[in-house]
Length: 307
Image (cartoon, rainbow, N blue to C red; front, side):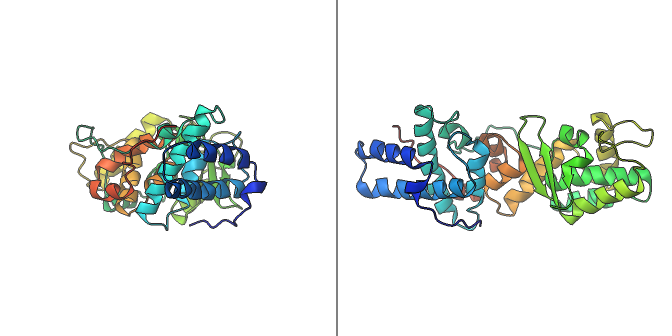
């Protein structure tokens, strides 16, 4: 959990809108205790935003997800309460045209649709076997291991891996920063050893000269493409003797496998959304079907209150 120094809300940029929201609550039939309960959670949210130097003019959905992810050490029930209160507050700000998105869109009530399509994913053991099947002694093996490590451990979209450049790796800060091709949002990842060392091995022993061009280049000096990545994934699935029957087995299945693994390891839905780079947490709901009992603990099934 990220700790923030408490700030005096009166001295913040948010105080004007906080007071307006408080007046709107006072004009309802809600009990005083309920109003104070909601305001208490909004003060915590504002405290986080202020600590991150985020004002209403530059507030984006990712900031909301980052706040909820910072509450990972709280109980699922507390997480649920805070998410609902924030949803109401964001709806108020949206209605007043203070922000460009509403709370219901980014923090929807979570329903597990039994009719929804079941995604294809693989277990942690299968993912380890996939990576272990790669012989990284030569150029191709080092290239393939670097590519698949990014797909398996970060769940990157295929196009984002293809578009990677060396400058996206901030070695001194030990982070990878990318601009996602799907939604143009910036996402960052700590450089864990399982990703850092395969990439460094490829850079030091395969690429003779690094330019400002694309990172992953085949031995014939051409860029990798989706066809190349699809082929190597299937090659190593076969070498690892992983049964892909009735399961998709492209790059996106590796992304789904990471999301599923995080659910199985009790990661909360907001952290999963942030890591996978979803612009709308509704996109993350696909993983909730996999562990219905666990997701009931973070369900947002609280009746919507309208201002």
